Length: 392
Image (spheres, rainbow, N blue to C red):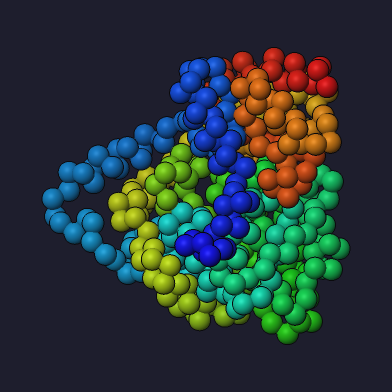
């Protein structure tokens, strides 16, 4: 008998390909120099936060009134929740108050909190393939079962597949737009159709299906402002973080926003607050809660992301790769030139090009490129992609 949980041992066995490749990249950089390694495995932006963030931190560091680092209500600082509710109201016109906002330890912390609040053992959560497979662990953490549903060939929503997957055990569905790993953005028409489907199915099975919208890439958009899920389905919750749009992945600050007309809003919010404490998060980081209202609409500069996307999409297509152009985020999900995506990844690794196989996102036969890196690095990687496809 092992001294370690069997569930954790199973998780270790199926450990994230993304982290494996990231760790391999760090190892190779130490051995041969970072300039010789093209590690496009993880969404860890090299770009710095906007200047407003550093200015706010500097200002907070000089405050001498005390109390800066103390506990606050578990939902978060009221002024921070007012700030976020205001921003959502300017998008949706729904009249959210700070009561519908719960600050979280990043989007991962937020998803775990909501799933703990929602799930009974063996209840199901639909995930749309390809997807960020950490969702599987989050769902399993709280006794749930993930149910994979395939999207269309272009990664758009397949409503027949979603409808067929819903049954009396279905408790929630997770969507992610812009999507990781594809960069695909769901249109307002798709979201409206999804909302109508979930209302119909909720009535059929006799309980509410909650839509969880995971949105850390929302403001990294190449197609303009995106539709807000709160305008398309009342039984929805936004879970997001500032890791990407403020380039703060290591700071773990995010929030949950519950639709003000969710069928079980008050009970759900109370459950989420208790879940925060049970999970040990207690509060989102105090300093970062204070920073957010001080920076207005600041966000990272999208110029290098747009440049990197265009260089890769155009360059890879010219070489013969099949590429779905992303509408947002900073990933490309590319058809592997050979059927075995893991074999392709191994060949790329020999050239010090580190990618993630599609099977890590539930869709074999593809690979993901993260392009949140210096444009010069992206340009220098193109000959390696060329060499690989010619050799195959």
